Image (cartoon, rainbow, N blue to C red; front, side, top):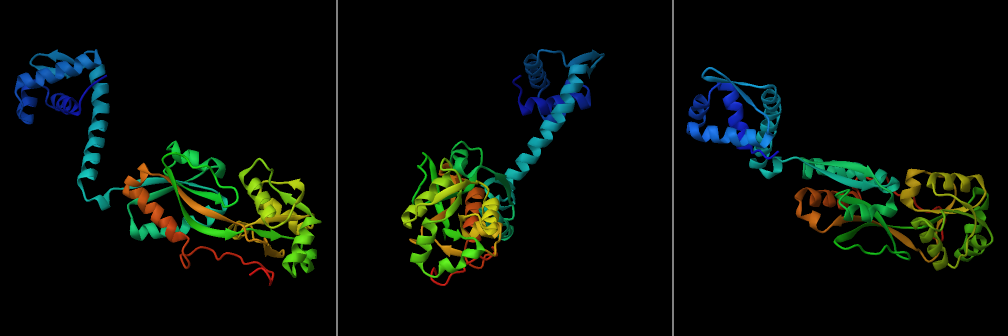
Length: 316
């Protein structure tokens, strides 16, 4: 069905006034122009809209159905026109942000608080997305912008039309069983102990699992992986229980705090929190505002929870 808003407006006036002539006078058209619009509308719908009642016209069942929906469509058009004709700062926009656990908890609250002052008509909708598929979700426009990850030793392949901006960099931390604190006195002692201990790591076919193994290799450690665990909180809990060493980052520990001893992995491999966005999406002021808010969220003093620091003296 191909109708125009002008036809719907004319139809609504005809239905309200009861004659083509009265509608023409009210709209400033000729009676012939009104009749022509109604003929085109009825031809598009292919069902009779009017029934004659002397000199007046009444609506058929199809006409009453169309009138009900036309009123909704015309009101929506009016609101859209009013919103777009007003100042740009008054136009409300919703930006979807792909998030994952540790970065979401750390960044979203300060970012949203920042937007309330810098761009009050921009709303954020957080959408949880698997961090490994985050760049593709952005490229396919399933989300507008995303918090993602990049590991220096295991970088993700670039995608056409997608760009990344580093927001925050943090080290890999070893979390060791509490009873093994004495092995953290020197970097060499830590490496030797790590090479003779059991480990708890994600599977090698996950992005974090691969990054952990590359980070260990950079540090001169070949982990004896006895336990394959993807969930960070479970990995930390298992390390606390004494069954092995695991890796995390300060933001990850912020999501699941621990009193177990920690140390920066020798060689200081790191991961970066990045903002991922389609280049074309940055033409939208609302998307640029959200990216600015995410940049702000990772600045010192922005209101994020303080990153936990390693508990060993030699590491930092």
